[in-house]
Length: 392
Image (cartoon, rainbow, N blue to C red; front, side, top):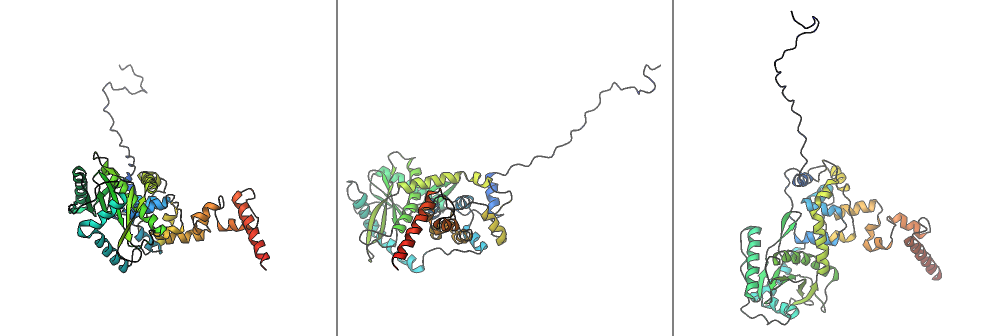
């Protein structure tokens, strides 16, 4: 007889087979930075490469997170502005382009004799003047990568030769947000002592030895980008030094004769370097955006306006000459009654006041009684009223 009770079935002593494990759904992989930036641009939209003008514009408005993110992601801001209904026309007139090309050809003619003479005159530092045997190497190569490699080789050879050398339209590489940006200055001159000088040739005139300050500032910011790229190359060559003073060459007075002036770009170089460091952290800027947000120009204007509004901007009237989204940002700044629409200087003078309505209220003595800017504005308005009364 069995020793088990009738109500309890006997247990088998055989080993039970293991039960198959139920597969768990795989956790979604977090998107890589490359995938995230591609999503911001839109499907099948290639990244727009950065050039010196774009990098210089970043230095002109370092507080604009919107531009930093869009440039870091490679978004085509021209197409984005058109899709938003606020296209911005950029570029020189055909006449200005022809005149600029003609002047540059004149400056670089005869083996760059006039250009080398100007460099020696302003930045020669006691070196022997360049002779007719100055070197002008051929920088022809296939593609931007090949031209950049050929330029690096020419810089190495010129530094080792310790002779005056003119590099006409060299190609420089600078890493921006993890990808190389290829930059093409007008010229780079190698001194016998191993110094490298960036030469920027512009078609605006230099009258009585001085040029328009705004145009000189824009040229300095653009040249600072070239200096940064040259510094990266110079780090690999012993005895080479990228000079922080560039030579600006412009037409003299109202003629077609070249005149030059040295421009120290250390401040612009430092600002540009900080902006490039900020672009390397573009992942943080992208991570703060809602999931699925995109700047694909194929989206509707309403969807794009919401996407652009999700990124903080710092508009100023100077943006109209440097950014493709400037007209859109200006419209939004005016609609929000922001003081930035009146200029950075006005915004900086008014401290905690951020809107035109707040400034007008402060002028008549309402609101912000403890704010020094509001107090000064109220006093200025009172003095103005008294002056107007005294004049009848």
